[in-house]
Length: 208
Image 1 (cartoon, rainbow, N blue to C red):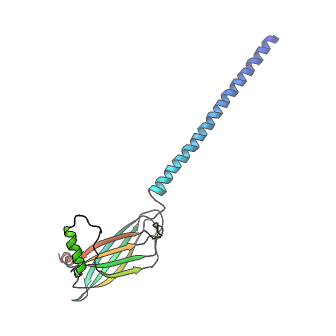
Image 2 (cartoon, helix red, strand yellow; image 1 turned 60 degrees about the vertical axis):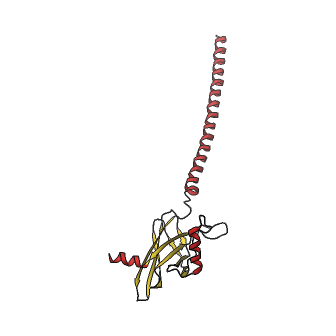
Image 3 (cartoon, rainbow, N blue to C red; image 1 turned 180 degrees about the vertical axis):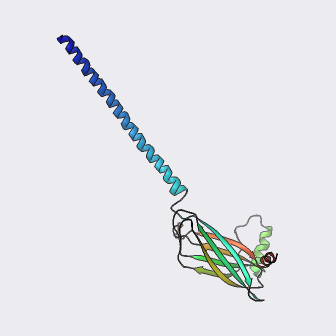
């Protein structure tokens, strides 16, 4: 009877030791799973952050810019040119700007002899060094009125210019500054847009 009791106690001890090993193994595996889960969460979080703030750059404002140009005849010698810059903040953060610029350049009639030389050279050149021609500057207007546009909202900035009626075609360049983005030299990187405007063509279209 005593021998049987000793065997039973020995069996119980072996069972306890075995169970301890099982629990220890389970605990180690749980710790491993916990570590894997933490690492996975870090990786997923990193990918999400990259997609959200780096690839999509959601910490920077995203904008659509549109230029609306029209004119009315003031007299036989003058036209009133109106330039509207429509800005839509399609990003997720506040769009801030302290600078709006509009430049009016004369295209037609061509009066600058150096420009005529540029155009003649461009006709025969296969590859040009310059991207654009140097059109004469008629007017430049810079507004430094602060502007804030909430995400999903729109804002319009407008400028007026008096243009001599002898001028037929102009190039209208507009630029909206971006306070949150700078280049390597510290200069702001904003939103530019340009269009050609034909005074005579616009009159014909309105008369249709």
